[in-house]
Length: 154
Image 1 (cartoon, helix red, strand yellow):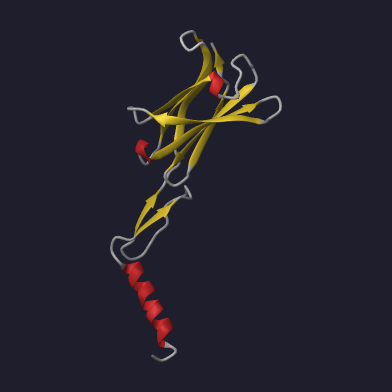
Image 2 (image 1 turned 90 degrees about the vertical axis):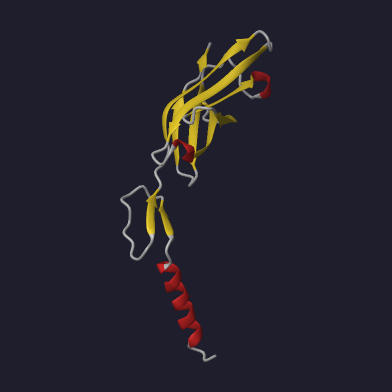
């Protein structure tokens, strides 16, 4: 094989791959969709949107412990099923220090995510008035949304 043929073959393979039908390009910039030539399809990923969030704690006499709960409604313009993870990060508003993190779980309603935890399994104190909770939602392309709420002490 002659020395110049290798670069020609690579160029032809690249052009063939770009023109192949079924090529999908994902744009995660959030801007207007780019234009493409050939048979490529452009799909724009939109970040999830947290519509509502809540956090709080209460005393449960059956468990004889505090119960911490975290809940949110998350939508995604691409589909509520595009949301793949939701977390609650708790911070001390006085010092700004991180205190604890919790995973929220999907429910039978694709928009609603929830979890609750025994207080003895956390680093949280139910009566402490200066917590702030950041609720984070992530989609399958790691696009995100976050809201901050103050927990309700019941």
